[in-house]
Length: 117
Length: 112
Image (cartoon, chains in turn blue, green):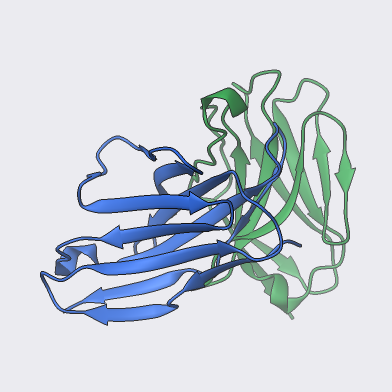
């Protein structure tokens, strides 16, 4: 299947700093990418939908000024956690939609572990 | 978005077929059913999806009832590596973003 890659796989940052996570579709162009977070023993929670060249659409309760999403090209979306705090420590996962039509396939990245100390 | 209901856990003997049920009684006519699985600490893996016809690929088969209110994912010959959490998701309308909203899924344990 199509490959979605995230970088870094894990990152440790100090409280108050910002950290950027990249999501790339390696062998296809993705008009739409999605960002999720997952806490231990819980399901994935959708944070935002990212469309190339336009502003991201955030889910209710997700702070758009804290979680900055940029989708500058058809193969790259980035999530920046600004002024990170320990409660932001989580597993962040992106996904990319193959093809811009209903019923297309969505592939997920391997995820990125963020630990804020 | 249409909700799905799955049993929280299931067991299956290695080599046997694993049949994972999913109810989605409020599904709309243009909404697809997607199945993913997640092995601990990894991103979800795409398995299969369908609209109303049964679908089969190298990983699994998807059986959707005629009224589309439920579906079953079939892993024909389960192996220990199929132990994972399986998510059945009704994808939101494409013109509203086509989001995948995850529920709690079914934790499948394949036993020797």
